[in-house]
Amino acid sequence: MISDASVNPRTSLGRVLADLGPTLLDLVHGRPERTDDVGGVVIHDPGDEVAYPPHALVLGVAVYGTEEIAGLLRALGERGAAALVVRGPVERDPALDEASAASGVALIALTQGASWSQLTALLRTLLTEGDVGEAGPESLGGVPSGDLFALANAVATLLDAPITIEDRQHRIMAFSGRQDEADQARVATVLARQVPDEYLRVLEGRGVFSELYRSDRPVRIAPATVKEGETALPRVAVAVRAGDEFLGSLWAAVREPLTPDRERAFQDAAKLVALHLLRHRAGADARHRLRADLVSTVLEGGAGAADALSRLGLVREPTVVMAMGLPAGAGDHAQVVADRQRLTSALGIHLDAVQPRSALALLGDVAYAVVPVPADPAAGRERAAQIAAHFMDRAGERARAAIGIGPVATDPSALGRSRTGADRALRVLLSRRTGRRVAAIDDVHVDALLLEMRDLAALHGDGLLGPVARLAAYDAEHRSHLVGTLRAWLDAFGDTVAAAAQEFVHPNTFRYRLKRVTEVGRIDLGDPSVRFALMLQLNLMAPDGPVTRQNRTSEQA
Image (cartoon, rainbow, N blue to C red; front, side, top):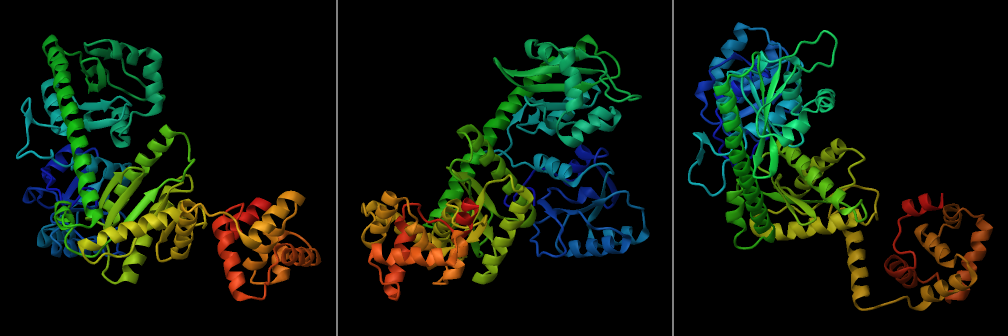
C-alpha cells in the first residue's frame, strides 16, 4: 500500500486519471466518478494475504489475460476496491466490461514504457496526506495548500502549456495534465520523476541553470535534443524563491513565445509556487514530527498506546515491532544520516506495499516499524521475518543495515516489550556476532544475554581473573596462543582434530598446546562446570572479545 489506510486522501479516482493519464494511465472500463476518495494503493500478490483499505487502487503487476483480469475484478469488487491497474495494452472485451460493471471496479491500463515503480512513486506523491492539525484545507491563491498537482494544472491553464514543478535537484515534484502534448524529453522526465542526465548536461553546457539561478524573470530556452532526429519544443523556466533561498523552478513546454501578459502571469505563478512549497515543506515536517510522536507513544506501551494506535490507523490487532539500524563505523556522519533516511524511506514504501496499516518512524538512530501480524506467536514472528528479509534482499548487499524483530504483542500494553526485544535483537546483529541481517529476539536470545552480561561485567569493573587471566598473561609474555587454543577446543566440544583444523595447526601441535593450557592455567578440563565457566568468561571478557567461529576463521584466512 502506498498511502496509509489511516489517511483520508482528498484525491478521487477521476483526479488520478486526470493527472496521470494519458501519460501513464488509460481508462479501459468503468466509471471513476463513483469513487470520491482513493483510500490507498495495494500491490496485488496472489501468494500473499493482503488487507485492502476501502476504495483501494490495486496494482495488478503480474495479471494478464481476459480470464485472469475478469476474475480479479470480481474478487476486488467483494473487497470494495475502486480500480484495478494492469499492464497495457488491454483489448476491449465484453467479458471485461461485464466484470467491471458487475463489480463496480474500474479497469485501467498502465501505458507501455512506464514502469510500476514510476507509477508507485507518482501515486505516493499524488495521494499525499493532508495538512496536520487543520480542520479543513487552507487555500493559497485559490488552490488547496500544498496541492502541487492542482497548482501545476492551474498554471498550465494560464499559459496554455504543460507545466512541471522541479526541486533544487531537478526532481519532478508535480506536473500538469497534457504532458503528451510536449516532446519526448518531457515525457521521459515525468516518467523518471527526474530530468534525465543527458538533457541536464545540454542545459548546463548552455549556461541555462546559471542564468536561471541569478534571474527573477522567465528564461527562454531553445529546444534541447540529445538524439539524432529527435524533435523538441522550446522551454520557458522561472526560478522559485523564498527570499534568497532557491526552492526550485517552474517549467513550461511552449510552441510559441509567451506574450507579455502570460510572461508576467508565469512570473507571478512562481511566487505562488514558493508559498505552496514552503507550506508543503512545513506540513511535511509537521506530519513527520506528529508521526514520530505517535509511534514513540505506541512503543512505550503505556496508557496512551491504544489511542496512538488508533490515530495511526492501526486497529486493535496483534502487532510486532521491527527495529532497523546501521552498524557503528558505517561511514562519516553525513553519509550515515543520508543512508539512514534513505533506507527508512525505502522500508516505508516496502511496508506500504506488502503490509498495509504498518506505522514507521525514525526515532534517533533507529527506524521503528509497528507491523500487524497473525496472532499466533510463531506465525507472527515468521511473517515479520519474511517481510524484513524480503526488504533486505531488495535493498541489496550495499545496504549495511540490520533489522531486529521483537515478540508479538497481542495488545497495546505489550508493545513496549516488543520494542525492547527488537532493540536487543538489533544490537546482536550490529555487533556482528552472527552473519545474519534479520533476526527475531527468539533466534538470538542467548547472544543478547551474553552482550548484556558483558555490559554488567564492565559496569562492575570486572576484569580477567583465574585461569583465563593466567593464560592471557602467558600469551602476552611468550607470544603464544594458549587462549586461542582453549577457545578452539571448547568450540569444537573437545574434538582435538577439528580444533586443530580450526587453528590451522597439526593435531600433535594442538595437543601439545592444550597440555600447556592445563599446566599454565591450572585447569581441569574434565570438569563440566569448569568448562562452562571458561566458555562464559571467554565470551564475555577474553582479550580479543567474543568473536564467532565464522569471523575468526575469515580473519585467520
